Image (tube, rainbow, N blue to C red; front, side):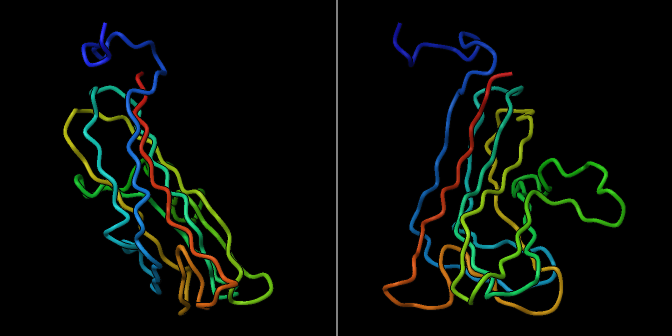
Length: 171
């Protein structure tokens, strides 16, 4: 039987039904805000689920530079279509905020970077198309956060395209 003739029901539980990838060359991004805001519209990713009961795993992997600052950078993944954070309805443990990832980058100088991954999951609940994005903020004060690059533009400093994926898994 041709793969195009298989239905979702033909796959066993925990099978990957589809993977969507955004590895576009979006360039370097910066932000400097103490309230959550979208990092960049060209770092969005969309999917149309094949099943209304599948698990969607959304993953952002990117290079981050924090200007050699002690400030924390917080991240969350947001469903743009539903105008809602993805799976952040849990207890935040006291006064803490619910996030999908956090990072502090103080090493040697302003060109220190790390590759980080921020992930979230949600049940598809329908087969309607939806779009996800990455929101970020710094904990306090003012400091530039660099995504995909650092502050210095020389041949000894790197730039990496972000890898943004969604996997749909049959439940």
